[in-house]
Length: 95
Image 1 (cartoon, helix red, strand yellow):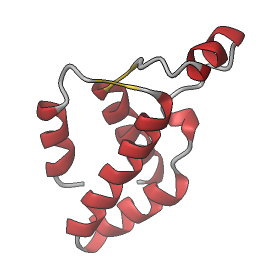
Image 2 (tube, rainbow, N blue to C red):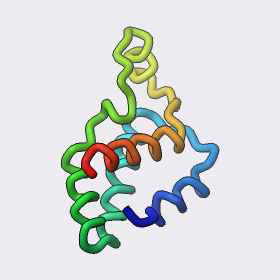
Image 3 (cartoon, rainbow, N blue to C red):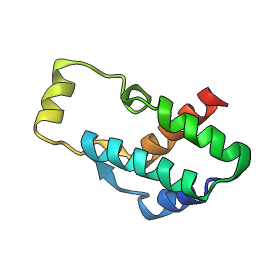
């Protein structure tokens, strides 16, 4: 897969940003959609499959009482690197 320019730009722009779970899911989907909109050929196929196969478990597999408590009060705790890693993992899974 070629370089993901939008993901690379996100890495720079959101370097120190923290996201709530809802924000992390939203930005993950939006980043994949933006990359897909610019992709061609095999890259477009991979990104399309990634969008269909992404699940929240790519971002966070934690399901504890504390995890739920943090989510309920909207604690921002997902980093841009965790989001990028989730995107890379789902792309790797579908390639």
